[in-house]
Image (cartoon, rainbow, N blue to C red; front, side, top):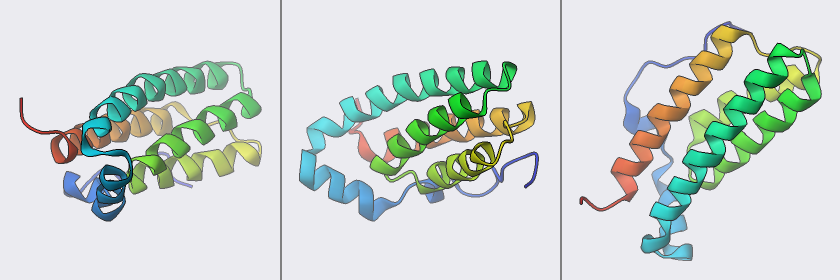
Length: 125
């Protein structure tokens, strides 16, 4: 496991467009914006919980925060973010709390993913 998650490449690759399209069809395009806003708020809470868990070396709390973040990312078609959270969740399950560099990389990927999905899914203002 590396200390830094891969962050290079085109931000459009951060989104599974087919999954996002399916979400728009199933839920209605007008609900995608509120779903993204909800994920933004909850995702940031999960990242804060992860930082708190790491400070306490609490692998169970870290795993729970990463699991929740992964689920939200999957729901929006943010596959690379979900995969990164899964990798860290697996490590936490095996007793390793993510290092600060890993948490920082995950937070950057989270913000880039949010920006990419907002640009892709939301109509211009």
